[in-house]
Image 1 (cartoon, one colour):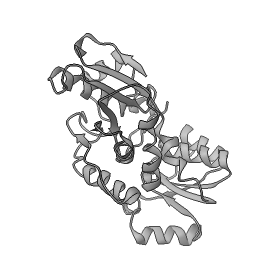
Image 2 (cartoon, helix red, strand yellow):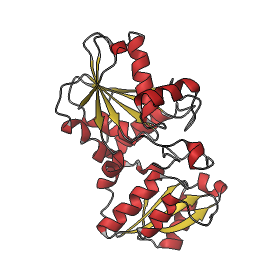
Image 3 (tube, one colour):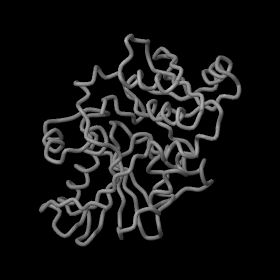
Length: 282
């Protein structure tokens, strides 16, 4: 763990744990011969699935939101180079990708044996992978925090927490009240029960997914952190500390799920909400 040193923290201590949640989400999802998943044109989830498919000899299919644009951007080029077959859904159909109608059509097209992984990778198997994280943290702590896009990471962390600890997720998108239901649903699917040791803070989305403000930009420049997820979580933690939300002596672990990245504007035009997937290239 790396301690975040900032005089504004006072007697509260914050420790950074760097952990890429993509491999955790995929770890228990790789026992298939063929795997189909969804994402936007700049989705790190698409990239991660393609890479895992190449490494483990799994045939992968990426269903990309919107129309094909050639030449492929670097994310999709990398996915294709890993052997992923790319296909596209128009935005109306993409919004219905979770429905039985669309999934039956996809299985008819790609084969009944294809396993379908949700956008962002959050399912019961992903939750079980993320639940392993708390057990790998060697230092003592009271609270663990993580960014929340689809809810899978928080659902797993909560399930794996030792007794007496609690988890706080920081939503990175606007209007994310539905995420509490998603976290509970994922826990039920993974363990047939839910936990009460977690909460989601909705106050630090800064206008919505991949949106920012001058205040957040200054924070990113100061701490040199990934902007879509990590910056919003860390800003929220420090702001809550300033407000006295944590008792003196509280030890907080902040899960850093990404490295510093360039801005969305520098990467390309936003393509719409991607269920917790960054649109910018790292």
